[in-house]
Amino acid sequence: MGFKEYVGKRTLQGVLTIALAVTLNFVLFRIMPGDPTRAVSGDPRVDTATRLALIAKFGLDRPLLEQFALYVYNLFRGELGISFVQIGRPVIDIILGRKMVNTLILMGSSMFIAFSLGIGIGVYAAWKRGTKTDVSFIVISLATYSMPVFWFGMILLLILSYYYNLVPIAGTVTPGLVHPNFFEYAKDYLHHLIAPMITLSVSFFGGYFLFMRDTILDVFTEDYMLTARAKGLSNRKIMFKHAMKNALLPMVSLMGVHVTFLISGATMTETVFSWDGLGRLIYDSVRNNDYPVLQGIFLIMAVFVVVASILADITNAYLDPRIREAVE
Amino acid sequence: MTLGPRATDSQLRERFSTSARRLKGFWALYRMSRIGLLGLFLISAFIIMALAAPWIAPYDPRALVGFPFQPPSGEHLLGTDQIGRDIFSMLIWGSRISLLVGLLASATGVVIGTTVGLISGYFRGLPDSILMRITDLLITLPNLPLMLILGALIGRSMWNIILVIGVTGWTSTAKMVRSQTLSIKERPYVEAARSIGAKDSQILIRHIMPNVLPLVFANAIVGIVDAILAESGLSFLGLGDPTKPSWGLLLRYSNEAGALATGRWWFIIPPGICIMLVAIGFAFSSYSLDQILNPRLRKRR
Image 1 (tube, each protein chain N blue to C red):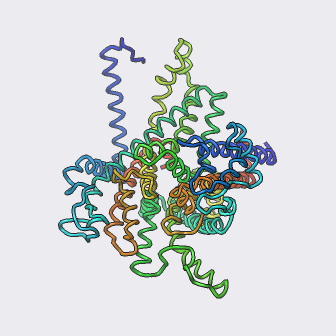
Image 2: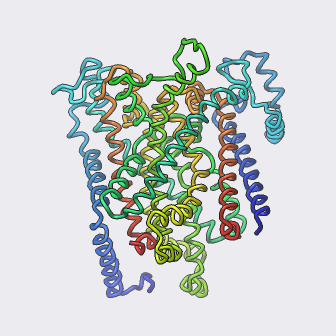
Image 3: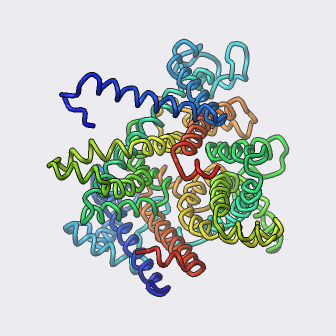
């Protein structure tokens, strides 16, 4: 199979998955007990005029199939309904704004740290396999995997914020503070970012580390490693030029799959640190029964994950021709 | 060798001794792993704690037994919470809920996953395509937000938490069982069973399932770790059953009481340590099991 065909096939799969997610999103919020229109308009916080407008727009008095068609139609126009809590504010404006940027910054930086550490230490541990260093890293990573993310965040806050007063206890920026220039703003922002970033990085380090160590050990059994050794290459060269390069490929596709877990972790972390992002928004919306917002975030996340995993797979297929051929 | 109702005594004895020998061999391998033994020890300790809760815990975990916000003392080992309940007693009783939810939710996921995997791999065709698309979708969707939304929609109770974790956590089992089934299905003895007229259900249950179960078992243990962590998270976020104190719920109380801002470490650290130790117990056991059951890993060493 050629590269172009692979990309085409993978994209088609992705579109199908997103279509399924849209359907699930529609069904999920309509099978719940009580009034079926509740999810879109039937909230006492919404006034009658707005409710009637919503019912007309989403065809809530029509048969289910027609509702679905209208739902998809509205979706394509970026119309996701209005929030029950911030009445009148379209869901799409709430989601695609500062909250999304905040979440992306938190997730991106944590992923980068966890990924780099996981690779570096994973290679090192595999090289020293069976030694005390190796075993202690395995134990540490299994321990961080077994730790509730939110609890680690609380412990971090207890130490860094309560006992040593090094980081602020909550929020994205200091409330009420007017920043004289962008530089000051960035400083304040980064200061708030430190603790949640460490929390999320630590919770993801274990998975990356174990996976990298395992992959490297697999690579060690390959014939070309023996060849490299027989050629008399230095350990350093064998490690970085031969082992690491080949082990990085599976890591790239793992990263694509991992975005889902990253979102789950971010939801927890943002809640503990009151980080003003989409994860925190999910929590608030669940508490306030703000169904339109929930539906909206859910959809955005599904699209985001699908796109991320497709990009990872395509990058991988581009780098490693064997993968394209393996796909039927 | 089939073991129908006509199986003789000697056949039964032989069968028993082979499985006993296999178990012994397995234990000999497992015993060599220090990580695995530590895991087993941790799990047993918490199971004992859960079973003996009524005798270990000094107070009723739901009763108001002292003044609110007391620091640790001889009377209240870990102090009291915001309305005067004994934190240590809640911690002991919490092991019951956390373990129960972990085990049952993982079991639910494993049953769904095994069923889906067997049907998908054995029958192929349309059921396979449909089930695998659903599996892919569930793998794609972020787990925690999905659980939160489901939990919020169906209501807050312990059984709903088990259900929510179970129905979102079966995908890896299904994928693994499916690929195993695909390969076992082609083996000669399955062919032989089919040629003497065994029904599909018979082949699936008697010939394919026993070969898949060891790996399913290893998967189920990882599932317990995930389920215990998910339960603590969901309870912390407020989807837990307020009448059943779990460790996650305890952490929620501590957060609500502002334990962080006031430095009440005894309200924050112990529940998390418990969650972590139980999860480590299962994670260590599954790590060692994987080293034994996964031939690829065994050969490499």
